[in-house]
Length: 110
Length: 126
Image (cartoon, rainbow over the protein chains, first blue to last red):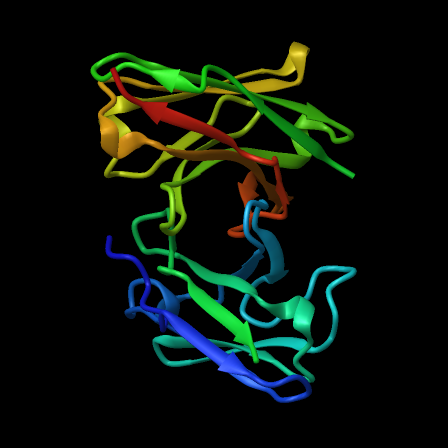
């Protein structure tokens, strides 16, 4: 199973909104409502930001939102803040009953 | 609040077996599926395997032939063994949890990782 496709990098200015895409196939992203997103700061463990496409865990800012259309899921961060600068990874359940991750997107806050 | 802590050798020789343990605190072993995930330096995440306290397991097909996951509920620990390692297995290894849910007849894992250990770097080198 190939990794999900994410852009290598995105950037935005403080206060702006950005969207990170995550493209898979009908055997993963497109076939299930089981897409999740993780934020990882350098040298730290990933942190769950979104699960089941659009649900936020308790304690995660409502500036983070998720959606899905067809085989592509998206993470949107609104009101960009300096602390949002990190790597972001998507993941999805797959038809072969396991989890696959995206290659990661480095977000730079200008 | 679940807390996870990985432990094990930081250096393993090529062709040998990598062994790691994750110690769990603050959570019931039956409330989660227990998983290993790795991240090569500068690269992305790769799910390795998970286990439920009942002994039910699931493996990444690409690693299945070399990996064994096990759990010792009395010690609140679960472990990973990976055989015949090469330099490509050099990575930060994380233990993590997937919530367990019940559909009225059986337990199943959700498909996201909600708690993570801090990670441990394992280098494969002679």
